[in-house]
Every structure is written in C-alpha cells, then in structure tokens.
Length: 202
Length: 160
Image 1 (cartoon, rainbow over the protein chains, first blue to last red):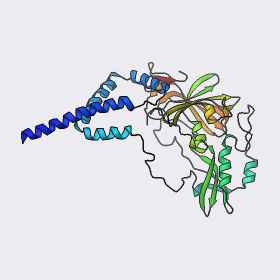
Image 2: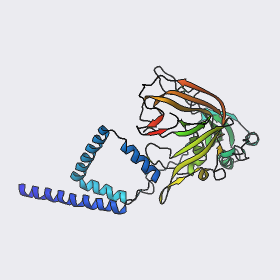
Image 3: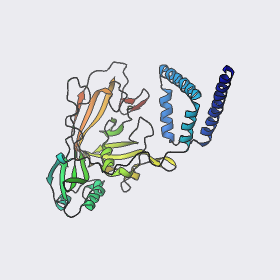
Image 4: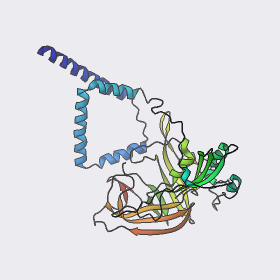
C-alpha cells in the first residue's frame, strides 16, 4: 500500500516535471511578445530600478509560483494550453440596453437641432479644426441627428459631476471647480433617453 | 491602479508633466471604435499626448499610442486619430482645469496621478481657450527629495 502510494506520487511528479518542461518549450515556440520596443525598453528600465527589497520579494514570489505549478501541474498545464489557444471571441455577455452618460435628472431644456447647429461653429485662427458644427466632434453630432425619428425631442443636458477637494484633511490637487460635468444633447423618445452626444467636459 | 505616465504640456517654452487627460473626452465620444491598448499598467489609457498652449489656445500636437490589431500591438500617431490634422488639433472640446505638478516630491502614491509635489500649476481652459493660470503651493519637500513628476523611481517626465 505504502509502496503503491509512493509509486503513484512519483509518477505524478515525474509527469509534472516532463509537462512543465514541455510547456516551457511550447511557450518558447509559440508565444509571441507583441509589445513594442518602446514598451519593452520602458519596462526593462523600470525593472533595473527596483530596490533590492523588491527584487528579493519577486524572487520569493517566483519560487512560490514554481512550487505551486509543480504541485498542481494539471491545472497549470490546462491554463497554459488555454492561453496558447488564444483569447475567446467574446468573454462577456452583451447588455442590450445602451448606457448613457446623461440621465433624466440632467436634462435642461428642449432645443431645436437647427438652432443648435447654427451656433455650434468652432473657429481657430490656425485652422486646426474643421469648418463644421462642433468641429472635431462633428461626427458625433451627425450620428445623433441620424438617430432622430419623428416624435423624438432633443434636450440639452449637463451632468452634476463632483467636487474633488472637499472634506477635512484633503491633501490632493486643489481644483477650483467641480470635475466631470458633462454637457451635451440627448434624444428623448417616449420619456426615455435613446441617444446622446457629448460636447463638453468640465 | 498603478501610478500613470503623464501627458506632456509645453507652456511658456517649458515642457511640463500634465496630470490630466483632455483627449479622454474626445475619445469617449468620437473615438470609441479606436481600440487603444494599455502597453503596461503604467499607461492604462494607451497613449501619451503632447499638448501646447499657443496664443492662448490648447492644442494637441503630438501623440504616441498603442492600438490592438490582429497582428499584435501597433504604434499610432496623431494622424491616425485626426487624419486631416497630423500636425496638431485645437482641443475645443475641453473645458476645465489642467494640472501640472512641479518641484520636489512630497508624497509618492503608486496610483493614478495621486503623488503630491511642492507646487501645482493649474490652467483654466474654456472650450480650448486658456482663461487663467494659478500656482498652488503644497509645501516644502526634503532637500534630497526627487524632483519632477515620476512613476516608480526611474521615469522622470517634465520640468524638474
């Protein structure tokens, strides 16, 4: 009985060693490092700059990971094969309901799209902006106009954002005005927001 | 989140570290299809932009980004996002305050742009036009404190 146990344990670890070595070869053969040279050099520089303490910690982490792989090699091998097979086409369930930045409470007033367009021209003396309503954002405006159907209403909106530097003991950046106030236009259909176009961020 | 590599801002002839992301808002509306990829945890947004204030206006004049393609990660430039304006775009979509930390490091925080420095230069922008600037003093750093915005201990960006 004892002999059998040791025999099977020996077999388990022997197969583990072989498969870990095979895995190493597979990684060498099939894994392509897709990071650019810029990123590689930046990461290499960050690596060089690590303190001895950090390097020691990383060393012990590698030892611990290696031991775990050796003990639970079937799991590690399954993960490796899965990784080498590539990413699945989609790993999340798509939500049918579109998400919008604006909510009903943010709607300000009903606007006339023609009037909005007439006042939305952006001028730049250096001509670094297209001569179109909302300049570089024109495509978003056109998409919103395309979404409009008979009976739809266009509203202007502004979200409330947040104040970053309130509260006692706050030591962070001293921004004066609230952050993340988003302005834009939304299409409302049957009391529901069905489309939006963001024009400005405070 | 890991401390992030900053944007660059050229203001009054000096290159500063910009700890805000004005392009984020543009990408949120127009560039949703552009599959930018984070090349490391220090650059979740997937690009580094160079901005200037010229004649009181905010322009994005240079960009180095990383895009996901079938063959891996490809580097992209400003012209890939704004094909008709490869030399610079007027950032009229941006309204708000831009923050450029300066001077010695007071406190290093390994997350976002949360590290604190002796001074913060704030530039108030309204639809791409510079309205005002102000400097906030946050305290005095130790004499041997590292100078200039940095992530971890190695990378230094901007004015020191």
